[in-house]
Image (cartoon, rainbow, N blue to C red; front, top):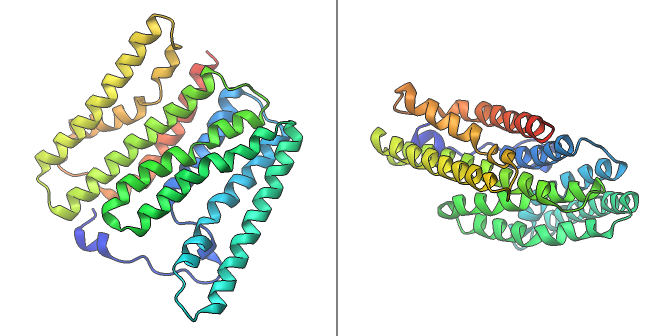
Amino acid sequence: MYTAQALATATPLRNGLWWLIPREYGAWSMLLTGYITTLAVADRLTPAAVWLLPAMILLLMAKEPLERLLRVQRGERRLLWRYLGILLAELLLSGGFGSLAAASAHNATIYVLPLTAAPFYAAAMLLGFWGERWRTLRELVATWGLLLAVPGTWIALGLRADMAMWIVYVGLVLHFLYGVGFLRLQIVAARTNMEAAEVRQGTILLAGSASMITVGVVVVSLFGYLPIWAAVPLLPQMVRAYLWLGSGQPWLEMNRMGRQEVALATAILVLFTLVAHA
């Protein structure tokens, strides 16, 4: 279980070129889940979609040299040019793969994707520089930006932006936002020594609001405004919260959170695929 001391421990620096790969595993999960879920729901794969994946991955990887570049101190010209060179190389490679995707799809709209993601990207980085108190807001902003992989992949598949695309996008955004909320609740509890009852109340709030949104979607679908499978995205988060509440355990073991998030992302992918093709 995490403690305040463990949470405050700095992550050791990685040797070699491993620093080029962002350590935000949640970011990787959002990007790849959005991409794979879109392919599964659309039930197709095109050359453009294949080219788009490395373009998006390289954009995500550009975060590391950009952050280091902004933190370079005066007089460290060698580091300045190193980080700048890596950043430009990743952006150029991303642009090259993006151009291949746009050419394969015969759709220049793909070029709009990084422009659309840029404000989210910039806001998330700025909030990160402002300190730990803005971490939750940063993660919420990043979630909306990273999951633009859904409309981007949808376009690369040669499909029109329709209700199904927006259900996948907004549904995954809600899924991951609730995951962020659940994680932050546990971290704050560990850092501030919150009472177990307060943690349970916070979990009830998350589970209850997710339930209300799901019920609302079901009611709206009865009038024909949405397909019933639009209610699927929050089901895994609801089940996780209610199972935890019913277990009688006062705390959630933080070292299990990573495995839980992978399991939930897999569940949402499978559920989306099954109901979309039912």
